[in-house]
Length: 134
Image 1 (cartoon, one colour):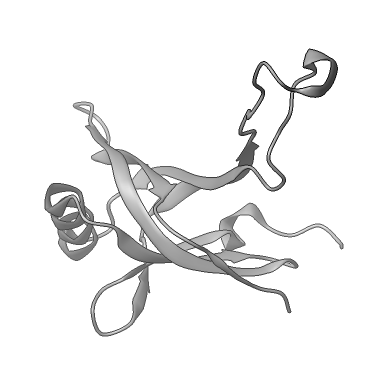
Image 2: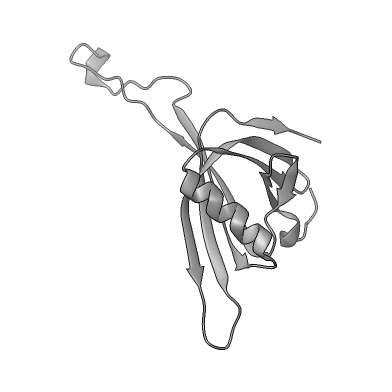
């Protein structure tokens, strides 16, 4: 896989009539994590730790940027206050597309007297994710 532009790592949110890009992002991050599930008990062989195959998987998405229009700000604000999982699509150049339910767990607004209003957001996966490889 060759190098790709960071701006091509896209977050799209389901707007009801299709997916729309979260506009104005300047940085985006997608992290996959696997947590172990410990099932060790007093009868474990040699008292060695035992783990369940597969464990617990999750994905975290975060981004920061500036709002390019009121529609993007309203869509994220509504999704946060609804508290329900939203469908996201994450385009990863050269690797494919990840899609599934995510819940907004943080939405921060920033501003300074000589700059644009900015935002930071964080999503956590809320169910199974589909991965489409090109």
